[in-house]
Image (cartoon, rainbow, N blue to C red; front, side, top):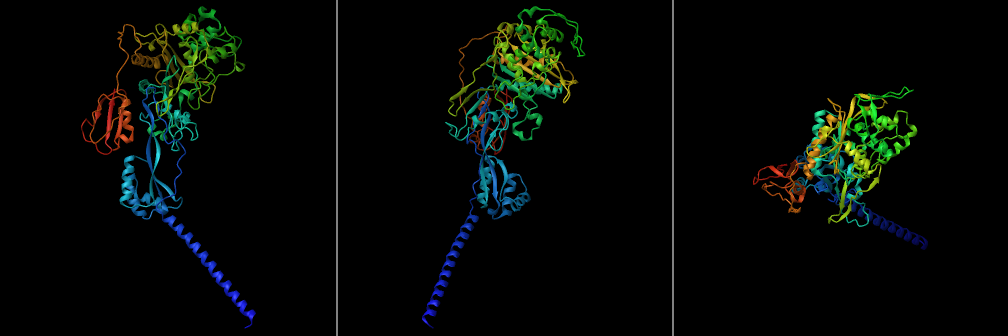
Length: 629
């Protein structure tokens, strides 16, 4: 073999060894990758779950006195990564009875095709979490995890539920204040000054008044078999809403099961013709446009016709004879207000009613508020002005009616209404306080005073709204409802309503009730006025407003009370007699209720009856019933 052949052979061998070496390196690299992948797949740690991006501590919602209506608590979701569950049969056998499921169902989920990650059960309580954690540990279950999630608790369930709203699983409000105050309760992550804790919203409502109104509303719904109902109470001077009822309403413990009828926010979103209640605004507007007509006399023979026209006449049930502005209000005279409307131009009348706020949103802190329906005079017919004057041919919301009525209590100034009293941070530093603002001045102080006199219940049709010992100004209404999708009125469907301001000489409170489609009777003076009387009387006593002949007792005005008391539940039942509802809210703090007792609170005020009795033993999950008055 010559030198060329030797060198060639040597080069071939070198190339062969290099290939073997490179192949060896590649093999080591592949084995290393397979080892790392296998280690990852066999690891007990699942991939991190992306939780919703919202505040770790959402602010609370309370009533004006700090009574909790919505607060944050913790729940847990039980999840599985199927490829990491080494013994699926054992997992199903252990977990099924702990979450109220069947072994077959869990096994089917763990062995089915599809996503590798799944939830076995959501929203488990602290006690359920503790039991499941122990079961996972004792049985050495792999691929199962419990993740903490934010939960919203609504201690009052149905009370003011339409107003409060509801929080979705993603941490964002779905309705009510939970929706409209989302960025206050749970500020965006990069908000200046945000420290991970949301701000607390103090609503303007008073839970005691809200409770009284809601109970009266439920009774009225049952008595009159009505389709729905709206009831609002407001502080006449500040415009703050003290009670806000929309029936039917959802129970926040079962919000996702609510019907569309329960979810409708009627005070803000429902449009209807107000009927004769509206006469207090139209008469006030006309008097303010022409002060000389206060004592003008109009003759009501039961019909107001339109000469040289085929337009239908405006009628009264019975002739009222000669009436003035005062008589129009006291007798609710359609014919009289029709004649009175002729003293003004269409445009001037329209603009004055716009100053009352009709045809525009109040701007209250709720989503989806309606502007109502109030056509421009350019589209009015010859019948429009007198028809509008008696409360037809326009659509309003209940909130518009209440805000417009503030003008009578504030010397002619319309005050903005509000549902938020104040906002605080977690150190109880007050960041915002509602202060009333004048929206417009539709009438003079003199006209406002006259209207309160005309509305006095002593002589008028609204006498059933009277309150013993307290002068009250009220007006009732009975409005025919327009047939849906048509331009004609129903012969059976009505809105029975009543508005009241009291005390008449210096109104502090406004009440407005509208009962929609009552059965058996349709008149506001019969259906709505007595309920106004009942709640007004309760509010008079609650706020200590003077009644004629009542005895006034003076004191220092300072009442001692224990602030911030927390109730910790142990293994025996404490004596909760005399404990206020506000103090009972600490029972919903899971850290103070480690044994997960079920708490049921009925009524308002202070505990007068409890089950179990003081000293009786308590076991895991015991139901504790507390009755208050």
